[in-house]
Length: 604
Ligand code: F6R
Image (cartoon, rainbow, N blue to C red; front, side, top):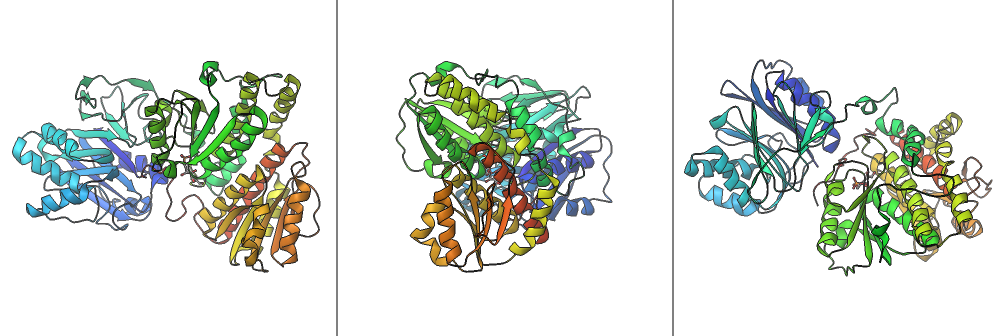
């Protein structure tokens, strides 16, 4: 969580920092700040709320010629979103920005306070700058003081620190939170938590590894690894495509991303299917040798995609599949056996809980596979193998196209494993592949349907809650529909297996309880229908989604004709995404930056 930028050079430092933060604002937006050191003088600005507030505050401030600057956009962990808690944090002559959590901050703070240091914020971050200055007083060398400070910190961090003692330099460290540096021909240095702020400024970047630390100044970058061994920057070309980062006339990024699903799923399938088989060039067939079980581990929407996969893997690949929520798995002393392939699923590739489970699986000697949307992310770099989902940059905090591509990858992967294990006939695989080819057409948003959902949405702005219900693979879709709605509308919504409603939740049924019922024609239709009828009989307000007419519903959204339940899955996915979007818009919420959330959850 949180976004960090840094710059050393002669261009307009303020603009570079602010535009970099704009690109990272999705990572956290409860406050933001910058500190710029120019001609030995620090200028520091902070503002609560979105970045526009900081832009407004810095309107009159100008930088020219050489300067060193750092900036931060915050998602609060320790301390409320106030100006005092916003980064950069100040010592006597230094500023720091940090992403992550310093776990031993309370002990350090106590010691520093006992030594006479006054703290201005409630954050864990502020200890870094004071600890650095304390070490500086003894060691009289900024880099040695920085290095000693890092050894004293426990937890996860990406840190940038600037000090008047060395006014042309940024000190950096990465341990568990993402950080990259970009370099260009003009000898400028750019730091950021992800690629996007660097697009247009640098052609190549270095992705720091966990444990890397060092400093950068004009003409010099010095990097040490976790064993304190000096190492060279490893430059990787940076994609220069910023086009997808713009809204293209849509009201919100989320809306644009829903509309993009058809083309990104085509990209996801591209080169990976022919008429007979699924080809993952990125996978070696030996990855599955000796594997008797697949364990899928993820958080949030990625977890829902994983849950869909668990049905497909057992049904098609006939392989035992288990499912784990990453934050639970981490702390429950799980049994890990080497005949298990450990699969992590993550849009960002930076989710702290998921990353940690990957480390656990690796430490236990399991083979690992990542299904991820961000190349070069921490999860991708750590996994034995990766399938990239190719959804492109996803900016809306509520994940849509990433989920669509994750499920597409899983459907392909179930057929890939089915072929390896001979668990399906060639003809059956070929038939499924031809269905896969139909997915892009089924997720295309149709104007009439969007219009209908827009109109319908006004009936669903109140009530005491929503139940999204489905069976089999439509249960994870129901969970995902409920998550989308609660994230951006702030209405209470739950996903439930249709058959489970009568075991308790049906007690809630009344006209103010909204049931969004997923009724696929090709998977347990009669059974799911009976479950909805039970709710209808108890006067719950029902909105049914199906390709078959259903007269027991108050509202009915008819999807296009489909010949298979997975195509119905993708059709219904779009309906649920649009329904959440339109309800949120009617409620006047900020769809792309819903309250209390951030795009990439890099804290546990
Ligand atoms: C919901 C959403 C989150 C993420 C979750 C995991 O719309 O976006 O639930 O799915 O935080 O993130 P990744 O997939 O980046 O690991």
